Image (cartoon, rainbow, N blue to C red; front, side):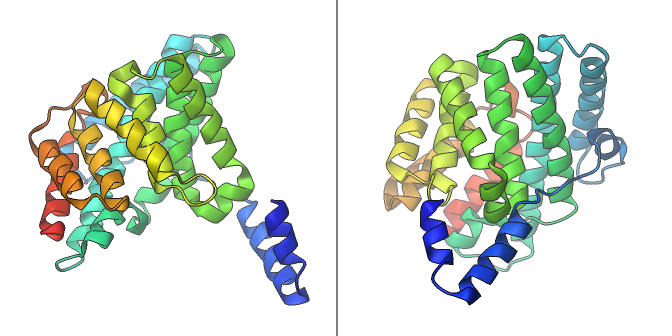
Length: 282
């Protein structure tokens, strides 16, 4: 922040621009309540309709028993699955709109996702953050609750974009949740804390990006659980690190890999995203 402040003091124009950016970024985006998002009919897929129904039930149960940490974690988990499926479906739609996309566009497909998916994801993940925090109030340090907090914050930050997220403090909150989950149990839920660590460090801008740390974490996650999402994300980090042949190998492994319980809803889309990467890299 001190570096930013020094830069803003260089000229009145840069100061004015900085104040405008701060005013914009300091206001985090808002979204409709999760109940409204889940109750709206979805034409995206039958799987999403079924998943939204499960999320509605879990969220209602959690709110009816606000001191029940297990119910809160369960609600957060299914809310994230519903948000993640929306993200993968929308990423594929974004790629379908581009003829023969280059590998860079394929890897950044999630950045091209707009509304209504972005607002829906923010809606679900805002509720997911609340559920995870309620669970942590009852079970401080619980790995499942810390993981869910990190997962939901990662998509809240994504929905807000880098500028708003930086000034709203999402980066530091996300790092704290990820570090807590990794410290509690890095192998939990098929390496999910390591996967989240690697994905965040591999895609985040300065000051959080760290490709060596990303590839190391994702290698560990994939060794522990060779599931489709771990192979896909490891391939992405390797490609960014310039290890192109190794990245292609991971994407090929993703095509035949199984899903775990937490990623079963989006596994088909993740395999298709691996297929698109291979096609663009060829």
